[in-house]
Length: 386
Image (cartoon, rainbow, N blue to C red; front, side, top):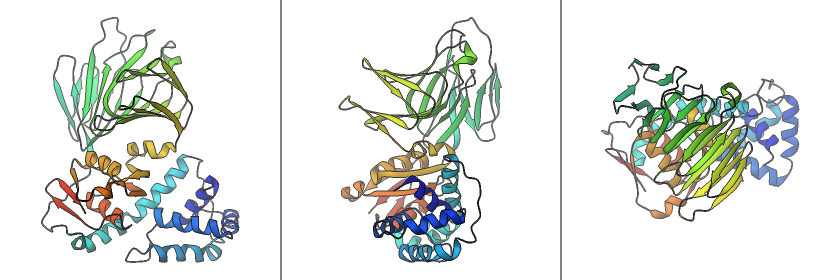
């Protein structure tokens, strides 16, 4: 689908399209093939009618299609930036329908075969374990406060004071368990978001005129790197399994889980160089390098970066992901185990944008609506998918 048209459709459904944009959409829909694209898009991403008490994709599609002419005159313009605004529009739509999803879920839990006496499995939260250079472990959780030797935490984020030091570099570790997520700021000002089941090794302080080196031992991290010009030109380097990402000042995402066969390096802004196995890969924004651990092969491709980084902003954005991949993500965030009764279901694909603040039942009901699952059961911390 043409990105401009997709943008207009999002604005139309979120009631932000201008009259001129509505004219463009109406003209575009005169083609039968475009009509089908529009129908599929509405069903997949916005298959909830705010005025209906049940989910009915066909009714949703018909209503939106018929309303284009009569509603285009009353739409007004709201500023939406090219990338963040587009993402925000999607997020606003999802949050707007969250209450309806919840109501639907509560009404239809019996249909899914979910026992009524099961304790609700809650979404993840900010939590981590800080390991100091002497081996001391500090639990960082909401409500806890830690301040010591230039290290500061309110239990939901961690920061380091910048200190000039000529002493030998000492390392700290930040470990985020399943069911957690955490934000930190290194002593050089670099910001890091760590996803569930991740571990980062980093210096307590960096030395000027030396490369600023950290290591993602496993998991996923988003880096917003403090520019080299603020540190006498020193590079920022991220090591991961023998691969080194060299940075001058940029934003990128690195995903490298132990239970996944591939690692993903995705550039959002600026420039980075990935050095591995005697080969260099220079990335520009929207580029992604995928490394297959089994074949040891690399491939470079262009991706929608929003799908790769939405996790840090409280959003699941799934596109071209099968159910097995999606359940891996959910299992880490909700700290649950997933059991497939039917192996074929693993390859079924789901496309959608969901809030990470929803309960696991709400997420499963959203997937179930599209006929991918017939039912599911919750037994303790195990989800059984049928």
